[in-house]
Length: 300
Image (tube, rainbow, N blue to C red; front, side, top):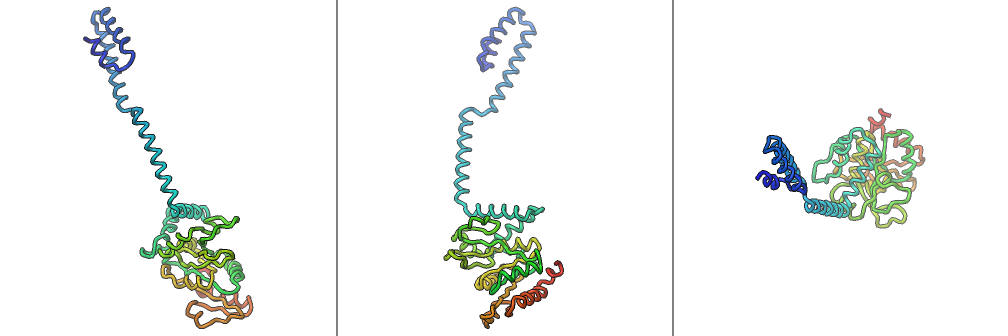
């Protein structure tokens, strides 16, 4: 009877061998305590083996789990491929991290993604405080920008703009320019995510749009510099009319010698500069900056 009970408890191929050994041991020893000890140890080992087998997945369950993993990966991959906005957001954030290398990642991420909120929500802190953005348009833009950089080095920085045109070979997406589709930029403009936008004036870019996001402006403000935009006349007016940023951008129109300021210009810009020579233009511009941005002048 002891042998039959042991046979029922051992689910492996060595059952007959162990059973024969226990019966023979019992016969030789006359049912001594040694044989009972051997049997007890075998029973204990068998029970441990059974509990271990109960906790291990069978082959069919393992196959089902692997199939589920493959299906889940394919489903996630299809979703990510279809989300172009997500790809652009993650790429832009990664480029911003590598460009500015902030020491406080969480604070930087908070300011970075806060600018993505639409106008229906409160504006992020970096869009509601600080110095106003400086918008310059009109004649001699490049010469004026060079003069600003020489007079106030590192104090005026241009935000990275966003355009729908394809990138040039020398351009680095997210560093020199952001590139999106026409559908994406129109959706973001309707969502109030742009400080200004308009038609691209580049040669061969007819029908393409370009603009400056509030996110890019907030990123410049976070560094302590003044956002500087050198844009077309229409885009400068659009920036000054934007209600999603405070203080309102300060717009300057530099008039050429052949085009004196008109009455309509006075209502669209904060300052009109009309001088015959470049030195006069720069001198007047520096005077305006010292009056409008005193903290920048003191820091420099």
